[in-house]
Length: 114
Length: 114
Image 1 (cartoon, chains in turn yellow, orange):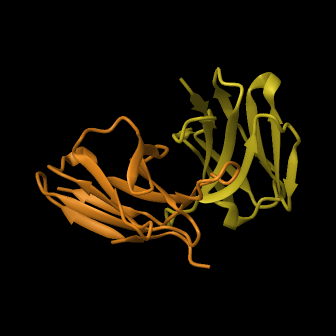
Image 2: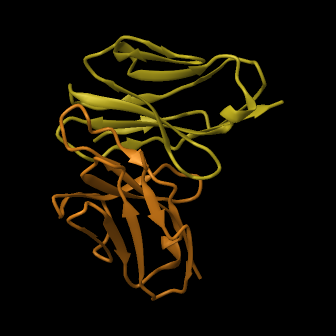
Image 3: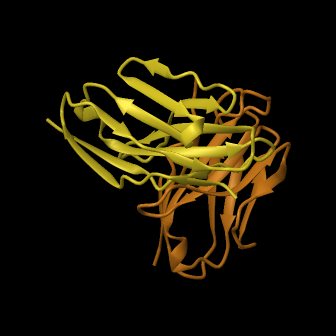
C-alpha cells in the first residue's frame, strides 16, 4: 500500500520568508510518480510539478524548488521569498506505475502574512 | 485553451436524494477521474473513466456511479445521499499516453447534504 505523509498541518510565515513543505512517501514499487498541487481557497487543485522515480534531479521554477531524495523517501517543496498569493493548501501525491489511483497527503496549509 | 469545467458549482440536497455532477475535460484529454474531498482532508479517488468505461475504482460504495460520453465529458451520480457525502467533488482530466498522465483539476462542486 502507498502512503504520503505531510506532517506539517499548518505553517505561518511573514512575507519574504523562505518556507519548506515536507513530504514523505512510502511505497514498495520501484516505478512511481510524485506530484505537488496547490489548492487556493477557490478549491481548484493547481498542478505544480511531477517527478518520476528514476529522475532524482532537483528542480527550480522561479521561486519554487523541489528536493527529491529517494534515500529518505522525501519530496520536499521550498518557496523562496514567500508572497501573500502563496497562501493555500499544498498537497503532495504519489502514484505507482500501473495504477491510476494517486494517494494524496492530508495537505499543508500555508499562511503568508503581509 | 479551456481547462476542466464542472457544474454546478454548489448544490444542496437532503438525505436520500440523488445527485448528478458534470465534468468537461481539458481540451485534448480523454480520461476523467473523480475525487471526493472532505473538509480538511486530501482528495480521495472515486473512479476513473476512459473510453466510456470505468477503468479503476477507489474504495467507494455502489451508490457512487458514473458515466463517460463519446465527447469525453463525464457525470458522477450519487444515490441515497448520506450526510457524510457532503464534500467538495473534484473532477480531473488527463491524456491516456505514457508520460502524459498528469491530472488537471476542475474547480469542483460543493455538495451539502442536509
